[in-house]
Image (cartoon, rainbow, N blue to C red; front, side, top):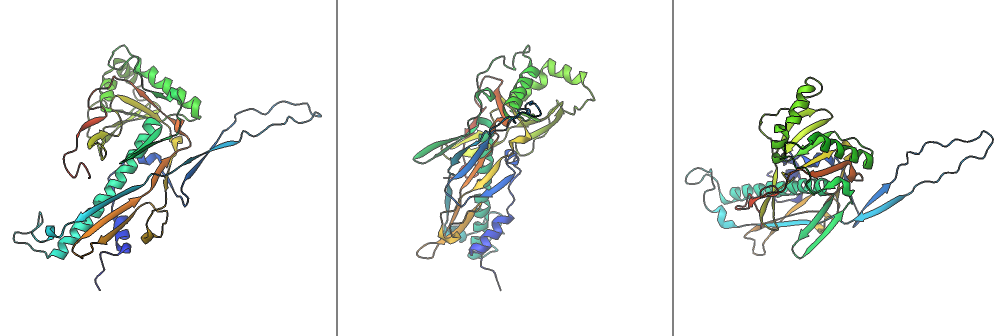
Length: 359
């Protein structure tokens, strides 16, 4: 018996088979949690490193108090898109099909639906990656859609979000190693975590690898936990692993995404900045309730369904999600601008095709 392509069960199974392209920033949010309420509650505790006080053997013990905790609430933003499948597209040969046509219209419709399903899931994965990158880069998320805008701010320490450029890396006299170590010290002081990854834009990398101090540092420590390549190499899906230098894994990130609001192709990470991260960032992906009766209003990562037109001639594919990424340790990462911004650091170009843009 042939399976019905258009059941929710089959669509869900097909969605689970779609493998998104390799994402980089999402790996820092390894945990996932479904949220059956309208808001995500993030409890922040304070860890005391006070040593146990001295006391006389027969004296009363010293009374101590717990520091307590603070709770912050965040509402997951909502994602919802719809794509119309025009039956006129099924009446003639598809790209790649044999001349004269080798498939019937229903077979072509199925291919369009599966292609649309994969496209929607890819866009969802890209949004998750963009949210993870934005939160790590700025310490907040700006949620902007048609007719609304609001900010989810995790309040990173200002000392860890350095936007003013002093002693730019374009100056050969700049002490790059000191700038990196100073940022690492601030992260350690603010979060208690030691940084183990150095991420930078490609323009910052160009000056990093040509800096004489860095070259001498690598020559001096040759063979001592250094595997960084200063020569160009092929990046994979927008990022390139340059190896290990001292305590840091060095990553150059050039990945882009398409912003549906202003129809621009943008960088996930500004090319004039660096970021130090610790594994202590340990973020979580939260999934809110889907506002749809067909999935029983459950809190699931992603939901897609097909809706037939009133006259039965066409289909619409609707995809929905309510994701939010958060971390209790936003100060386990820090960002510094090391070059004055130029065109192309954040915005690459205008979107020109459906592959670039939706809507």
